[in-house]
Length: 501
Ligand code: NAD
Image (cartoon, rainbow, N blue to C red):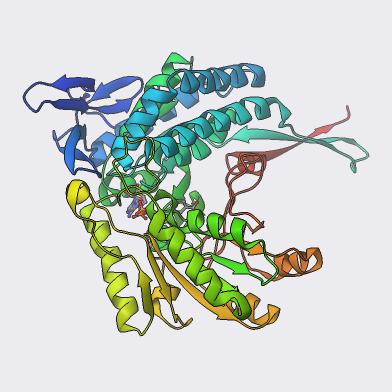
C-alpha cells in the first residue's frame, strides 16, 4: 500500500535518551532511524533483573507500509537483485565478517535483552556469522537449467527473487533466527522487512546497521519492531509482500497462514515442538544424561527443539531419573553476565507464570515432581528465574505431556518395547526434532525412519547444522530453513522457451 505521509522525525540510533537514561532505538527504514508515526515506544527489559535497558519505537501500520514501500522501491530499482551473484556473495561475506568483528558487543546485547548466559550468547552470534558466511558461499551455486525435450527450440529455467519478503521472528533466538531468514532471502536478491519479537528487537536493529556498513543498498533490509497484532499482521496483509517467513507458536502460525491466504502470499512456518528423546537400555548413559539435560534446559527450556519428553526403556528408567535429576539440580543458575552461568532467567514475568502454571497442572494431573519448579531466592530474586523441573509418572494424555510448555520442564516416561517407544514419540501434534540413544545401528536406522520429526539426532541432541534443512513435520511447520533448500523458499522458477529461428 503506498504511503503518502512524510516520514516522522528521524531519531533513534542507540543514542542515550538523557531524560530516560537508557538508549532510544528507532525503526530502521531505508537506512534511517525513525520514531513511530504515533510516537509510541516500548520499554525493553533485562530478564535477569527486570530493569529497563532500552526504549524502542513501536511500528504502526503506517510505519509498516513505509518500510514495505521502501523495500519495494529498492527491489524495483534493481541494483541488489540484478547485482552479480558474486557481488551479492561479497556483501553477505562482509556481513559475516562484521558480525565476527562485533561479536562481543552483539553477544552482550543479546545476553542482556534475551536473558541468555553470556557464553551461550557468544556462541549464537558466532552461528549468525556462520549463517551469513554459508549463504555468501551459496549464492553463486544456485542456477537454472536447460531442459531437453523440445525439438524446435530450447527450454530453460531462470531462478528469480520474489520481491519483498517479510520475516517475523520470535524472542528465543532473536538474531540467529533472523539470520536463517534474512541471509537466504538476500542471497537470492530479495528485499526484506523484519518484524522482530516485541521483547527482543535490539540485535535486529544492530543487524540493520551492520548490513549497510557491509555494502547492502539502503532499503534492501528494514527492521520494524512492533506488536504482532499491528506490525506483524500489517506486514502479512501488505499486498506488496510476496512471502512471509514466520517463526513462532503454532497458534499464531495458523493466523499468519490464514491472513496470508487472502493474497496468496507464500508462507514458510517454523512453529512449536514437543520433541521426544528415546533412550534405550544400551545407551551410553553418562553422555546421554549430560546431553539430555542440556537438550531440555538450555535457553531455560525456551527452545522449539527442546527434548521435553524423555522416553526411557523401563530397565534403566529409575537410574536415568536419578542421574538426570541430580544433574538438573547441579545446573548453575546465575546472572547472565557471569561466565560460569549455565542456566538463565525466563524471558518475562508472564512467561514464568505460564510455566509455573504448567508445574501446578502437572501435579494436579497426577505426575510426580521430582525436583525444581521453584523461584530461587537471594541475589536472583529480581529476575524471572525458575529452577529446572523434572516430572515422572507422566502419561501421554496429560496436558503437561501434550502441550508445549516452553520452559524448563521435562516429563520422563518408561517404555517396554521399540514399537511402544515409537508410538509414544509420535503421539503428538508436533514433529519438530528428537533424539535417539542406542549403540545398535540397525535399531537406530529403524527408529529414525519411523519417527515423525523433521530432524532426529542419534546419540546427540544437536538439531542445527547450517548446511542441512531445519524444520518440522505435522503442526511444527511448513518448509525448511537452512541449507541450500532454504533458497528455494526465496525464489521462483521461471520457465523460458526460445524457439529455434
Ligand atoms: P509468538 O507466536 O507469540 O510470536 C512470534 C512472532 O510473531 C513475534 O514476532 C510476534 O510479535 C509475531 N506475531 C504475533 N501475532 C502475530 C500476528 N497476528 N500476525 C503476525 N505476527 C504476529 O511466539 P514467541 O512466543 O515469540 O516464540 C515462541 C514460539 O516460537 C514457541 O512456540 C516456539 O516453539 C516457536 N519457535 C519455533 C522455532 C522453529 O524453528 N520451529 C524456533 C523458535 C521458536
